[in-house]
Amino acid sequence: MSGPENKPAHQLTLRSQLPELALVPPWVDALARQHAIPEKRCFAIQLCLEEALSNIIRHGYRSEPDRTLSITFASSSEAGLSFTIEDCAPPFDPTAPEAMQEPAAPLSLLDLEPGGNGLPLLRKFSDSLRYERLANGNRLTIRFFAAPPLDRSDVASRAPTRR
Amino acid sequence: MTVTTEDLAEGITRVVMDGRLDIAGAAAVDLKMNVIAGSKSRVLLDMQKVSFLGSMGLRSIVIPAQTVHRRGGKVVIFAPAEMVESVLKASGIDTLIPIRHELADALAALQ
Image (cartoon, rainbow over all chains, first blue to last red; front, side, top):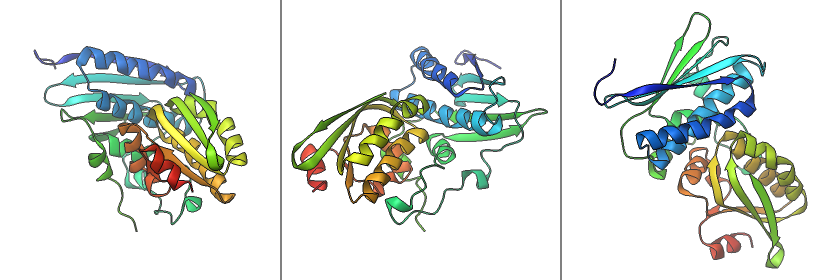
């Protein structure tokens, strides 16, 4: 459905290889120029896409190199910006609480597990995540609403409460 | 993504990271960062020129920082750009590795 304020959708298809992720930033930059997306929002978009896509490639596809993923961009005055990722991987809902769970806050740097930040960053830097299981894959829609660009105070306030 | 080093006074090493710390950038610098961490004890991690930071890039900071700490050393992150700092804060790294925006403060934190 389109209206006078809606932009046409754009799509990017990637092979399931981590080096393919290098195609994403220039694609996002081109969308940013076309749709006047602010720089900070562009950063958040690139971050969310990197985290979501790398998760699919490394875990969903178990690094099998011959699969594909698609990203479809849409923009509307009502829904803001959306990036919908579709894959043919086994079921995985990155929005599920167990997927988003962050480890307990470490007492010191040496107690910190270096990994595990990807999906929490996806949650914190996006405005909305919606997951759907498809017949043979997954669909994740990442939304960025028409709001002021993210700033530190906004993201910091979404940091987990230390236990 | 590139990493260069500069030896400053009082045994401090300035490690300048330049570029995107995305998955590819992290892979490009991991070896050099680990070599630095294995040999330097006071590391000023200059992130002024880092234009992007993702979760794999966080590992490229945390793992070398842990190595320095295990060896009894210190690491300070210097002057990350606003959105890069947002990622550091969102991941809680800022509570474990000090961030300073003034060079004098960063150097003092390494004493």
